[in-house]
Length: 125
Image 1: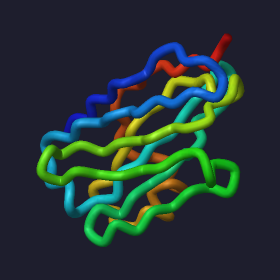
Image 2: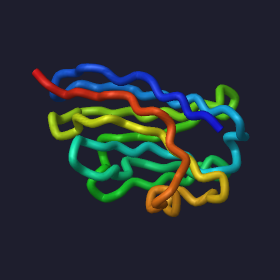
Image 3: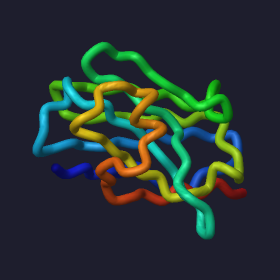
């Protein structure tokens, strides 16, 4: 199982970025897959998760409104569209999955998903 994230970078406050995560080694239409982020000195927090077998999404309350998760099963890719970015969104963003979990809610609350490598997002003027 591999998760390859990309699309991070430097963006000004109010700007947008789209992160991509290419999944390999498993079929994207079964397990849930999601995005998490981490800032130095803090634990990883869930941003959004997607149940790929029924397209049900989950967003923690703090992430609702500016982040949108989507998937293209044909490309085995999951996206995170981030709009109206704020400096406090600066973090390393990771994609993750749990092969035994199809629920988006459960994945976002999982303590031991399979992590991909992260991509740095910096929001600064």
